[in-house]
Image (spheres, rainbow, N blue to C red):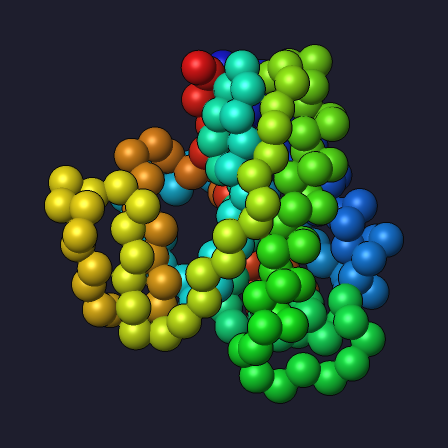
Length: 174
């Protein structure tokens, strides 16, 4: 992807994420730049992803700690949440879906029409899940949840209340 397209989509990711938090989640967030994730594996506690297809295909994803997912859910629902439960998983799916939907509308002219999937949320400790592997039956145990991709993730980190999360994007032209 050319640098100007990369710069523009990072601005769009920041804008879409800020819009969702400003309208749906009473929580101040601060963008901490962006970078390409060079590692093949990304380990974290919670991954929420929405895939898209069209002229381009890829994934937009939330990567964060259990604590951050609980904080966001508490703010989103306006009630105290203390444990990783179905409400947290649903909220993380909805968060990613809203950011993905906003991004889809913003990048239409550059990337063309896209169709979004339903969100998939993976949360847990002491497990590793690979989305692409030479051995498709490969399931390993390690710390956190791991997302494996053959393409580099474009990561946009955000921080709030002493915690961080990343909004990641991996995209390719079909």
